Image (cartoon, rainbow over all chains, first blue to last red):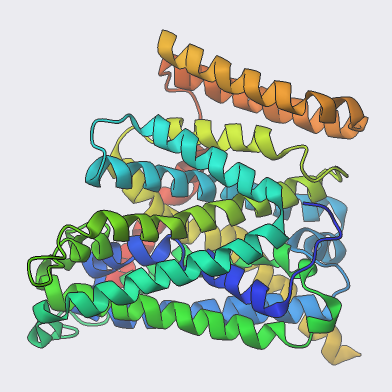
Length: 364
Length: 79
């Protein structure tokens, strides 16, 4: 994790795809379907539009301000102290984001495959794996995650194809039986997770090679489009297979994988597919930890970027074990509180910063 | 509780042993930030080991955003 590390625009877009698709593809279809019913895919498309706006903002800021990251943007535009006031809530959000991913992984293993094992064991193993990956640096992550992304997307596409005998097109209708309200509720959930989290990705933009500077914007938008299409198809598959029950099953793709049978030879493949899906959460957790470490190091101007990684990992591990006492609290925190919190504390300052820079540019 | 204390002791011992050479090389500011992070983790460790209901990060967010977000969702659903 040294300061001279650099990646290509293609690698950046792969990291971006891993960051936004990682845990979302396995988690988000269920709360979306619970909130918006058959119109969950419309909610996803609306949320995707909000993601496009956030990505456009960070790219615009990065092109017009000499400061390379969210921390520098805020300090340059608002001064040192107001910049700190903006950066500190973002730091807390990052802690929460990473802890929530770790909690989700523990919950996934406990509710599907390894029901007798205590959740802190999963939390620890997962966070230590993420810490070691983040410590290896962004170049290693960029090279490794491309392969893992192929494995993850391969599994997802396999699930879509193999469960096709169970598709019922009629389950998709009616699309909006209760009007636009539930659709907007679904969009609110998907906006908070994963699209508002794109705001944190500014921390990785400075690692792109200078010669690739002109190209990465386009490749990031392509990655966002791939993410949107993947989640939309996953949501539609879930609705076409489970119908009105789509919102009741957690980890929808995993539940769909349980249905796969082929000539009575290929059965019970859900564990293999489950691990491929969990790889997505691992990639997102590693990138989140890397970003968290970069934010803390830049905020306090610590020169050795690797030095703070393990204390931050311990904090996230302990947060994952102490934050919520019941699953209901966790669900409320992620689906109700998180979208508003991240929009107020991260996206609103980002929009204000973009507006200020746009006004300054127009006055020049 | 004893199991959690042993578990955390092992984690801290491993991390501190690994970071000791880097600690020696680190600047004063780096050591200060490292110590602050460890102090925060120690607070969380006490909560975890003793199963205490002490103030935590999520409660801050709950206090600030729970009611407004519920009202917002209610208004969305009413559309």
